[in-house]
Image 1 (cartoon, rainbow, N blue to C red):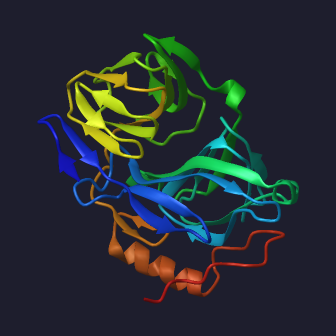
Image 2: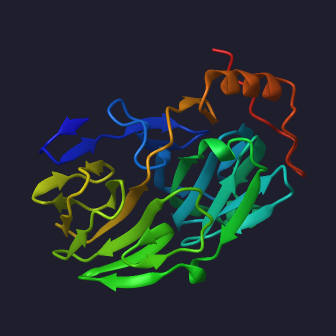
Length: 292
């Protein structure tokens, strides 16, 4: 983490291995557990998978959060304990609300595995408000064609979830949310207004300047509140605008669980050991609870 100006904090990614491929994790960070409701931010790829290889995230549980999957390249098959089976392709959104508990897997489909696939995308978690922690789990797929697409200054913006620049996505958010994908040609600029409580800019590809502060690729710039900023692409760039209302109180995060109390986390551990969250139809594997 580096403070390069009084208004911008740069978060560096940390590499994590997720079953054979590396991801860059920027949230949670020491200085910022959350940005708006986002409590977890992973960037995976771009990675070329040879024929016969693929993604295999075995069934695992969640509580107290919503997972948000967004791809730039490749495809994944989502399956969950509600019986949902959904292929996600670039530009779509998979929004899964865990509530009191859900189990899901994400794998490469047989046809993708056979041909080989290029994978590149974002996996994020949103902390649920306290009054939704015990809500029924649900899953929503939002096709790319239904998302607002707008041109702002020299930028092309897709509103993935929540609202931005006067447009709102149909994605079922649980609190005020900013989540938008932006394409900037080299030299183009985008003014990001201070319309959300918390905001950050993540450089997916290419290098950026924010009010003349350099932001390297795969780094997140957390912005000060109540100030508009100007993003400039030093080369052709892809970025994500991230933020919204911060959670309504402290959150604890352990493994795949997010909760407003440690007791909820301990209860989730007991339930997963006892396989009480259900199973994913057609997928008999599962990830055991980490015991250390």
